[in-house]
Length: 424
Image (cartoon, rainbow, N blue to C red; front, side, top):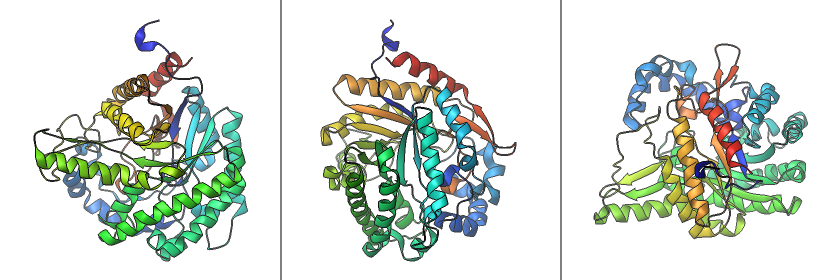
């Protein structure tokens, strides 16, 4: 058997896709829904300046019309995954994927403070059962950035006194679902949420307050720790962790003292600060990887100009390899790549991205790093938060103008073949 197709991934390796409730379900009502309605006109009017100022998208001429329409910034019907999930599970299975990471929408379960919607609990119970019926491992993500409107009106995670409401929600999740699960992710990218929502002011509640950002970030460590023990109490075999966005942060010039200092500071505060606080309360290290960032001088970004994905993000998929080595060196715990993908409307780079990612994982595993799974973001084209509908991350294309028709992309077919060759 040729070396490049020799099976190296264990039989129980998790090959998966990812979704989050607000980005695919449709029909949600939470703090993001309210924010979308208030800000759609502003986002559309300023799309060109916002997008090019932050990322310099190479596909702007093609997506300009959509990006400058307020409809682009309304999640609305989503991709109707709430009703079409069985079809989506069948498509996932056809791609030789054996697991799905998904989130439960808190605002569906507890739309009003203290009032549980049992019919929604049953919906997610059926959802999990349909995954298991297909031998697809369900990996539940408790919180993926959205909260009920009433919780947001209380100040959300900015106030420690509000953690009791989140704990109550987690307790219900644990009681209702823990026995049917092997893996749970408590929080998605707490570093991104705290900075974008409370420091940069780009997402709801659009604060620009470093103190608020620090408070939210700290409180999310407390939220995770409480959730960890609540979940383990219901099922002590449950594997619990966090999906943290980690960047491969490098100095552009190894002889640049300020660049080296910037790199060390950013690696610590962006990558390791949160994980260090919860290292006793994680059974695996969840790694969301999209970015390799180079610094030149004192905190000055200096990334190469090419290649860029549709969002204008510099692409270096092989940057996952050194990040896996560092995460393993820090914690010596199994790693799951909980998110990793590329915005690529023409399906031009996705196969290359996937191939380099697999090579990076194989290299790390050959050096003793224990990797238990890989989840591509996203299973479906979805609503990309403040960018709306135009970025296309999905393994499966969704035509929202033609009855939500699904179509498997060519790169996804390649991935399915590759998984088959690399699996025992």
